[in-house]
Length: 215
Image (cartoon, rainbow, N blue to C red; front, side, top):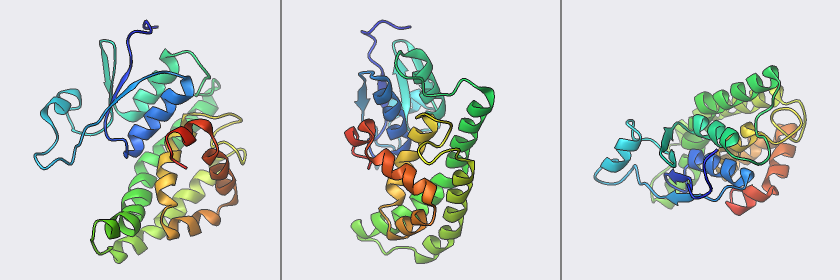
């Protein structure tokens, strides 16, 4: 355990779903931290100091005392294991495997579909004065439905994605779903999955989600 003076630092943009997931883990553990904004889309490219922290120029990266880490899943698990507070990973091997399965599903199949192909095209593009790519958006809808269905099939309750308590799987999913449902198509698709809808309604009122304004 590190002394309290070693304030964790999260490097990344507040809007990033993966930065949000890491921050949610810190919030749940009751850990004070610093967010250092990094613009990986800056005109000059990824800032050189950030490339020293993350050789692939992605966000977030993380520092705790002298220890540095990148990849959000690894950071989230480290936060759960390094700090006191509620446990965010189940102890049983099968439940922990399910958590890793769902977070892998979110990363590998859901993130680009829900956020980039649907949210960005339906919500961000008009705000930026860009015409939405309707073909890209429409092609993403069946993939999004498959992702939602796959997650719902793995749920054991209506309230948590894994097991009977809040876990890193819930915190990993919240930012993605939060962007997704800002698109009308996202709201319509989610409504077709009653257990996920109940989960989302509950997560919107969760204190850490409210503090980060992700609901």
